[in-house]
Image (cartoon, rainbow, N blue to C red; front, side, top):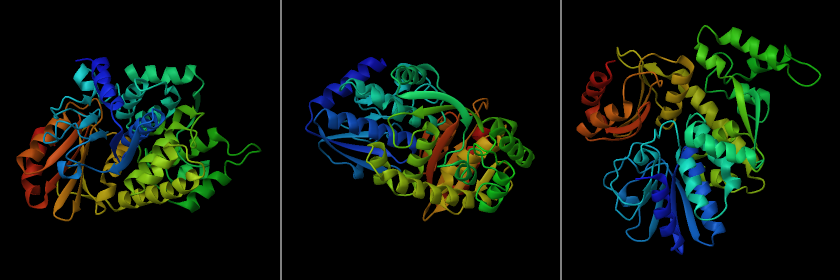
Length: 405
């Protein structure tokens, strides 16, 4: 199987449709993929509806018609064969209509995100290279490096003047103050979520042209270094990707806004932003502010789970994936990190590890979840699961044995 053959198969089927149901995962990468595909369908004269979901099951899908899942579905074995899946997670779905880098022997965790795959599909529906910036936002939101196919898409955008490379702070926000306040990857202990501390820091860095970036960065690092890994501090500054066509003109910021809107239940607003609907950015930023402060609060309230090092429990289940992403970025642990979040009669599980960790989280979490009546999805360094609350002890025992923590 090749990316080209899978892409052509999906494109041919889409071109034959009058209406397409698009269901996107509520994270930045899934939403970016949904926006890219929706834009391409609209420009091709194909009617569509875009919905945003945290997960999907066969009962959520129409029995007939054309359905495309973006950023989700690869892990579901029970989906109908007519469903089309554009995803980068390890595939278990056996249907014929799927576009997934793993099927072409690529590392879907690092080389091509769902948004990148959707971008390739869009090019088979017309010339939609102006969407390269949205694809890069999806890659950034998924934490993927710009390597392999990702780099090809990025360079295409740069060559067309759609993406402008630069260097600067990685603090998603409308200004530096908001960026500091809402910083999550990494979180800045004592600074994130504290407007008073942010004002104090900026007051010490005032200059004629705005805050002195070098001085500000030095002060931040001095303050957080005892509790933040060197890798995380290094990530505060680096390559930035200006997006000349988007309402939020920075890839890191657009990824943060799409993710916040999708995960906080404002998927429609995320879609409006992605579709470049004038005026949507201000409301989207307000939702982002509220969401990231909510995650910061959940992070502060997280508690260690029993005696397992690197295992935590949070009360706000919706924030569990974001808390996991924040902690693995901030702490850079040598062993896998697991977040448990009670959610009614189920437990949401978010597991993360650094690339150098030997554990395969997708395989370990999937096996433990299936053995205890749950379901899972993910890649080697990142996995999500939902398991029955009554099976928690058995699930955690199996997972701890599998990843040796």
